[in-house]
Length: 250
Image 1 (cartoon, rainbow, N blue to C red):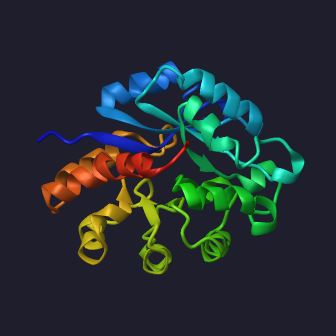
Image 2 (cartoon, rainbow, N blue to C red):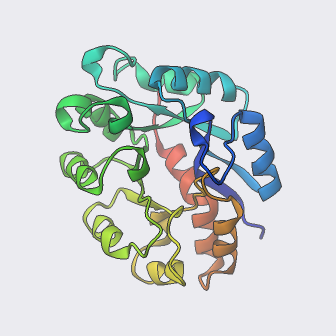
C-alpha cells in the first residue's frame, strides 16, 4: 500500500527566508512543493512576525483547502488580542484551523501558566494539538514546565537541533504520554528504527520543516527505515490525522 504523507511542520511567509534557501512566500508555492514531493496534507503555519495578522491571513489562504490544516498563534489572554479561550475552538473550526502554537520570544511574553494557562487548559480539555518548537522562542526547559503544569496537553514537540538528540527527547517521551515528536530534526543514522524499538510508532510524526528543510529527506527515511509497513503508515501520516480527528472544536 502506498504511504500517505501528512506533514506536521509546514511553513510559508516572508520570515521563512534564510541565506541559503529562498523563502516560500505564498500558499500556492507551498502547495506546488507539496505536490512535487508527494505530500497529501499537513499542518501549516504562516511566518509573519505579527501574530494576529499571521492568524487572519493564514485563515484566508487555506479556507478552501481541506488538506491544509492551519496553526494559530496564541498570546496572553490579558491583552485581549486573541479570541477568548471559550470562543476560540469554534472559530478554529470555521477557519480550517486544527492546532495552536506559541512564539514567546518573538511575541514577547512568558510561556507560563500565568500568561497562557487558560488557552492551554482549553486545549487539554478538547485535545487540540499544541506545537512547541524550540526554533520559535521556547526552550526545552520551558516546555518541561508547561508539560508539568498541563500533563494532559496534546503536544507536538520540535527540537530544532540536528545533532543526535535522543538524550534530550527520550525523557520527554517517558514523562509525558500525550507528547509526540516531530521528525524534522531527527537525523541520527538508523535513529527511527532505534526509536521504534523503545517507543510506540504512534509517538512519532513525519515533519519536514519546509522551507528551511527539504520535504523529501524524511520521506526517504520513512520509506527505507527497517520498521514495519504499519509503523511506516502511522508515522507518515496516520498519527497526525488521528490527532486532528480526536480534537473537539464544537
